[in-house]
Image 1 (tube, protein in one colour):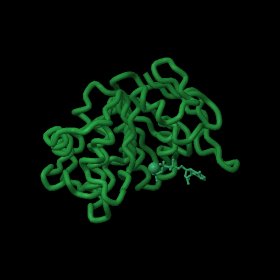
Image 2 (tube, rainbow, N blue to C red):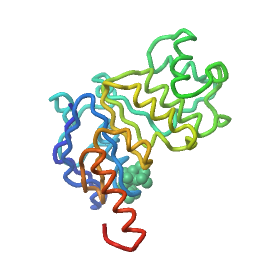
Image 3 (tube, rainbow, N blue to C red):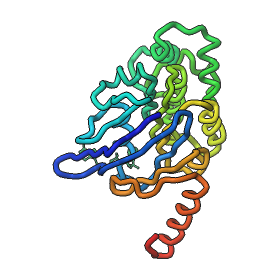
Length: 233
Ligand SMILES: Nc1ncnc2c1ncn2[C@@H]1O[C@H](COP(=O)(O)OP(=O)(O)OP(=O)(O)O)[C@@H](O)[C@H]1O
Ligand SMILES: [Mg+2]
């Protein structure tokens, strides 16, 4: 279980996150959504330990991990998929997967990870991680790397970014394949949002709404329609 208790983050007097209380059960899939700048990426970074909250605490399975560095959190099963994998001259896709698993994988294992994210493995396994890979390809490789690393709690920040609309089914099946793992997914996309057990809507650094997916999806639809019609919510 992952629990955020009264988490706030302030930079130069600006409240980016304010008093966030959130409990995510083991095995649950939670989507965090909300307007640009509402604090979603900041929240993910705080959970992973990339930034430290100004106040409040984060607990993983009852342990207070607020002051633990990223690698200690990773050891405890937190895994993050960044927007893009690290690019190093000479580093191939297979090297990256080997780094994630901390051992050399045989080709068929690497192929499995790549095909899960919809990449034809033989075309990519020896590709260098450089600017010749497209945004969507890099994103898929990043997700494959997170899956190869393994873990108990997966954090994805806009996994759909750069992935074409036609590949959405594949992407949602990646989340399904993580079955019993805890997933915290930042997304703006209806199809990704619909895969969640619960949705958290952030607004100006605060939890605006949280609830079952079907219930919140309806309210998101109403908010959008009213916004188009010039209403409040
Ligand atoms: N270190 C910082 N210094 C100043 N402002 C910051 C800092 N980090 C984040 N912010 C601001 O905090 C707000 C929330 O940023 P964040 O990246 O969490 O938003 P987001 O919800 O992920 O948005 P998007 O949907 O565009 O990705 C933004 O207005 C951002 O400019
Ligand atoms: Mg963001």
